[in-house]
Length: 192
Image 1: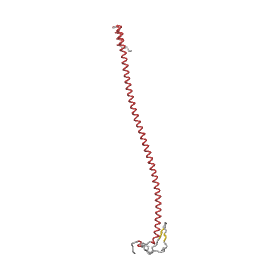
Image 2: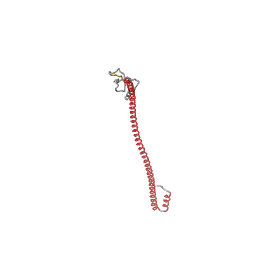
Image 3: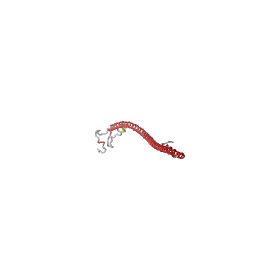
Image 4: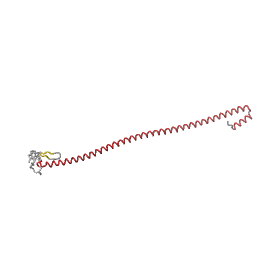
């Protein structure tokens, strides 16, 4: 209980001016008033503390909401990053597979090219042999060529695979009576 100057003046005035009975009631009344004011002050302090606590709780709730939002955003970002990483790995695996397929195809094409080149070389060599054989056959046939089918001096010949000429026995020693430089006998429309 706090004693103020008003209380002291009131008590002194009561004792000197109003007697003892009035003083007891006044004194009780002042005591009750002081208790009520003290209670009122306590309630106000409690209300202010409650408001401060409420404001503090609201602020803490806002901070918690903010942090929760940040955590949710980070969680979403991490999930997006994991998804992106998975897509990148998938792309990498796809490109690796494409590279392996490309490499296999390139090896196959190189092998085919080498085989083709070797085959072409063999074909060229075979063509040269065939041309040489045909040339030998033609040179062997040159003396026996006659453009007229009814020519009696025509000699049937057989050519072997290597280009050798085999004459038949019928008239092997006879040669056509045409000039070897004159090729008019090769013309089937020639009447001469």
